[in-house]
Image 1 (cartoon, rainbow, N blue to C red):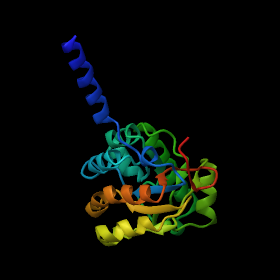
Image 2: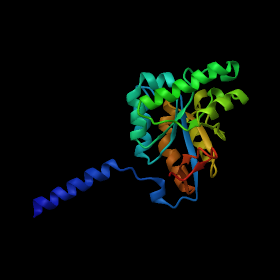
Image 3: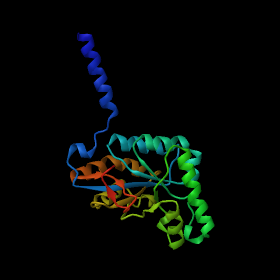
Image 4: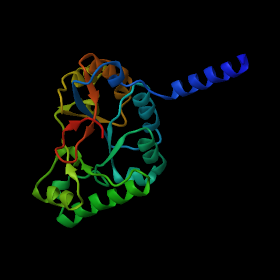
Length: 220
């Protein structure tokens, strides 16, 4: 009997070690915010980013560049396996407003295909590089059933923002808002535990971005 009990305890501990405690479990969610990470995936930064997010009970939307998704399909699968949502961030990260309609179509359609081929499903969210958009970009995105998502708060991590600055930017989020972060900065990964703590202390949880409204909502 003692051996059987030991096995049960060991199994329970093994399961517990793989399940992240979410802010929602620590406190009731009074609102939801959208954490987003652009420019992935890559073999050098995505695994560590996903580990940090999972360890801190956070889910996020990963706006993938198509050529990166095509080159790192295993990381696309890892994103979805970790409970993240995958969005379209164009194929080569160009200034879309300077391209023809046909070129914009190619950028968006090839990314849809690369993400789907990598196991990320068919994206329903689209973020134009640099947040630059116009009627042509929006029209093409709509043709593929994509909701354009910009951001409410810029973390500044692309511009070498410190860990403290990235945490402070996340602390400005209010219910429904979306923040811009990136897959590659080391400071962003380092900020994740404090981001989780800050959101939880305010009763905010990391949610999904609604394809209908572009706002953060409770995960479906």
